[in-house]
Length: 407
View: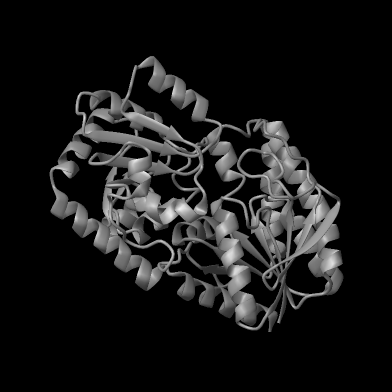
């Protein structure tokens, strides 16, 4: 089967979407399929093109046995709404050219976000008369409206109309969770058009390792109780709560908060910690993926956070990395969120609602004094990954969907 995959990110970028789409393409090739991946020049998270690449109109390369077609897009280190829309829009347009260069496939798979990329995928599917599958990994424009980054009413109506158009034209829609499926059902999408293929992680790559390791030694964390957040510092997080909890716990010298990542909130959080004079918070840039297993293992608690507005429109990939590492999840999300339900149903962590820094600090104290509880939650998360969220199982589900839709 010849497959075109269209997504904004592809290896070597350190972004969750790139990891999953890269693994999907790689594994489909191993299963005997021919895969061409249409993407842009690697630039995430700093908005600068990686060394060895240029932002050309078209650039072709072969990564392993995956054919990659990279097309031009507007790239900027500034993450304002306007510049981000330019980035999404320009790539979505030039991706159509990339798809033409890729040649006629048996099936097309495109990722959202960015939402407009679906228009290019739909046009290609019409041109070649082949089915197109839309993979929804964040609910847009719901998430942009909830975050407050999309406020103009005309723009909101435009993007919701685009969403309805794409849902009606896609041959099939692949979703990352049951909550997302319910969202689409409420919008009138037929149930038989929607399939849930969860976010996955490779349990062989991210596995339980000793806590006292090179990552802890390098960053002065040896012997400390580490509360770790690793991921995008964006609008959907509630990391201010973590800084407030760190202030409450600042006199407890054996607890350290580590925030790893980049994003629009990083400077705000750093300034907040500096104003409070906190020495128990360590900010680090994104770490090389090769260090991910050791970094995750260094944590006693892995933090996942979503604010109230965005708790039903996103399911962070970091959730499953924490589970795979055998560490318990400390979720800072509304009680009605999908993450809160996940940690409660599987016993892989605990949840505290945003806006309760004192409760959060007290919970961290309680967890620190209960190592057996921590260990049990970590083991439960690992079991869930091995049985329900493993790379092998989920890629297999994806392949089955592709085969059924391609006929």
